[in-house]
Length: 476
Image (cartoon, rainbow, N blue to C red):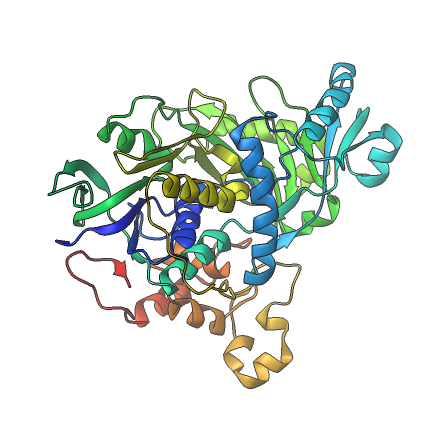
């Protein structure tokens, strides 16, 4: 690219795509790139998928402010974009006298964070709310607005809105180097970003690279943080376990970890986890016998009936933890560089507020913002269990029988949904990306019955978008 673009965003996770969506509201030439072959392929796709209130954040921290603001923004956005969200509420359970004594302080922290709906529950009320809890719960803190959300549809919605507004999306493009290039004046200076898909030139660079953000930050001369990958293993229980649980069940956190939770998912399953293990290899998303055994032991204590249910899947996600408690966000005006790092597990909730904050900081440091006509969120295919799915919609099936032709029987995914995903603005590159758009292969059989048909459909649909110059994988 001989002519520099205005803003280049590195990282197409939920934070990077949220920033791209915000930038797309202005008259700026913007591109977002990622080393993966789809949006949301890193930490964004493998987490506990909770839409937080921010009740337990550190009061006064940037994270506290952005989680609170982001929670409100994402709830509104999800309604308009049809992102699955369910307000289940949460119970933070005290199992010991010491934990029971900590509940008033946690409630006070919530109020200092601006969340006032918390209240303490006695043991009898806890069991009335969650009758399948194991014995020994002494009390709880109720957080009625904690919710569950779809972690797959969210970054895809942000990216779809951005691409629709003119942002270019370049995938399978890993950054290998960054050089600052001078010009006739400050307005002509730019960054040269070397990637595996070619060299890109930009006036502003945004580092939202998640697990790789410290590497890119060092390319720009930074040394304020290091990513310390933390793996969290989780167990997914079958949909038949869902009636056992009414709320998100949280433990009282310790100084080291937030502990193991039990939570419903918007797809109708139940999650148990995560573990918290510091690892050397940020790409190591394997599950371990020790980790899963520890989770089952905790699950047996928290909710004995749960561990008797069938397990659908296990998975692990890696969080981009740093040595700091708070988010690592800074904007360097003279360098025209924004670093958005150390976001950890609250990034999904805070994503829109992080984007708002970063773009405001960039504007304060000299990025010229000229507002475009207001955009509306895309209407995304609904893949949750709480709303109507295509196979349940008689009128839709009558208009197009493909929405009544089931391909994935475990998850009730239809041929029409797969066809729509393959023809979408950001089509799936492989079966995993298709899973995140439709839930195909996400059920109890894990693709045993439908994988061949899914593979045939993937192979039979040609690319909609020709490869642009100079680099492959770019959507305009």
